Image (tube, rainbow, N blue to C red):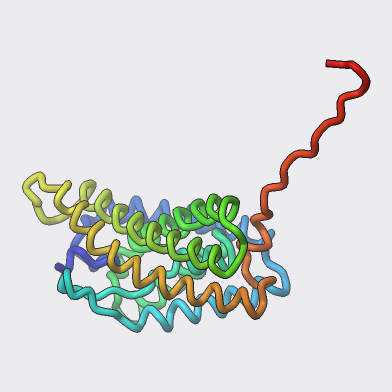
Length: 239
């Protein structure tokens, strides 16, 4: 079951594929730094530190997935995307992953590019795209915000798990006998259950922050509700 872990350990993916994803992750994170600097202000900068610290702390708490015989924890992509946006959010999750790998040995150091790609980049991007869609169709009430946070968190976790499937297909060190579909299905099933736990944590946290300080929720500030175009009056008998 170790091959089902989102924190990929050394030796599960071969070196060349790990190196390619390390370069990809570095390039995207560099772009996130450049793009995220535009968003940083007196609210977002301290919030980013709080979000990274919160994700780090909550990731240390695992909840059991009894039906799968494994445990899961918060990945944080959806939470970071909602509170500090996709660019800074991806950086927050990436920093957490680097600290966990270097200090706690959670995920191989040689596999950092793979883990960052899956959890910090794919997970955060998928979550924010869904957040942008849902906040345009759902009411911006606590219930609407909770549904947005929950659904985006579930989807982001499943998408991140499928990133691992792609990476394993490209450079997995154990022969699965062509059963890649089975791996994808197992990963999706396990991480759907993990995503439900993550969704509950994300929804509770975001709604709590929004009730106290809605101005600190990046998604509410940046994603304005759709405004219908004003009707154009027709003069006289013109058609």
